[in-house]
Length: 340
Ligand SMILES: NC(=O)c1ccc[n+]([C@@H]2O[C@H](COP(=O)([O-])OP(=O)(O)OC[C@H]3O[C@@H](n4cnc5c(N)ncnc54)[C@H](O)[C@@H]3O)[C@@H](O)[C@H]2O)c1
Image 1 (cartoon, rainbow, N blue to C red):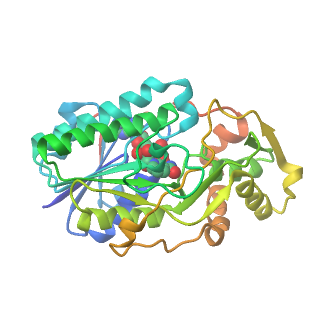
Image 2: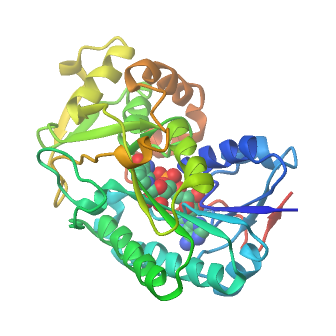
């Protein structure tokens, strides 16, 4: 049976990709390879694993022998596993380099040895660094400004080496901020939703004027599937929307959903060590393949916020009981565990 492997598939974006892939490739065996860090949750993929529609292999993308075992016989590998939260990267940056650079290298080498037919690497618009005006296209040089984006850029440098040396069939997708259900509430939308649901104030960095573009997780997953099928090997694709908002606008929209005046629920806190003012990407290349976002944040936000309210017990400990930073609380699953 043809096989697809998704690394990081028990996390936020990976799980959206997994459900979409399941729908689009019904005849393939689907394997989710995930270390189950604090950001992962078995409930994110229960609809797949509990029904036998996917297998979860718990393990580290830095474990070469296990990676070879998992990708053996795979037609496609979608590599979405990463340490993904910029704030954490200021504290434990070495983990970011280990997972995001060495982990990507390990996956590439495993794919090369096992003869995987196509790899889609999930990257970020943050590799371009700050884009004050206009939009970066795929030829814009990389200028990462924090340990997270540096590690994602580092991963892309390893890919570049593999493309030149081995002509590997790798396609890279650089996405902008993705929103949706199942996102760990360290990121702005779920964090704000949870904070207000717990009766706390919204902590906004600096002036709150930093700008980001937002794309629905389902639209991003559709782009990844399109690249699995039709992305040109060796090519990079920006995947972005035109939905651009200041952080303070996001706070205002969420406060509005809860029926609060923004000024009553906002708390400005000192900015992080460096905070890019704006990211912006030109997605003409993937749009030429026929992809275009189907969702708008303004239409989706209330539904997304409601999901976090409905699932408050999941994140209660993190946001409501202790207002602290995310810690690696783990999931209790051992390496090598296979589900079902
Ligand atoms: N969230 C965004 O807005 C956004 C935007 C653009 C790109 N990205 C990229 O998308 C990918 C997924 O991001 P996300 O927001 O879903 O992150 P996430 O933190 O929700 O999920 C990451 C997943 O990777 C797994 N993982 C971490 N280290 C691992 C390791 N060593 N071995 C195996 N699995 C490991 C985690 O357990 C988790 O399931 C990342 O590559 C990220 O850089 C994210």
